[in-house]
Length: 64
Image (cartoon, rainbow, N blue to C red; front, side, top):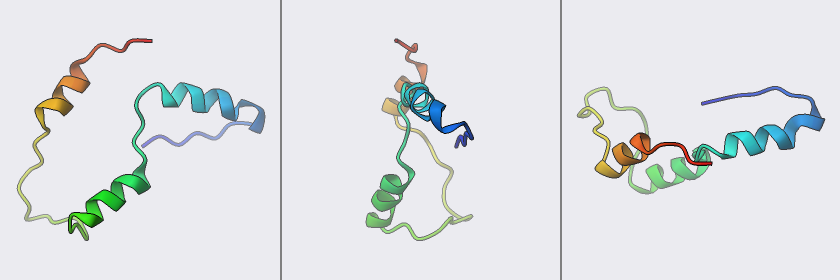
């Protein structure tokens, strides 16, 4: 998670920069997780394993 404090006249510029990196909408993600039955962190759950699609996305070179 990234939080940025900037003057109002720089907000659009900062949003443009941050949107280049495929940001995740935290509230939309929570809605999806809640719809799948998630309610809270479960310390007894199996370790998270990323899907192949996630691995490929992280390995993909950044293209402007």
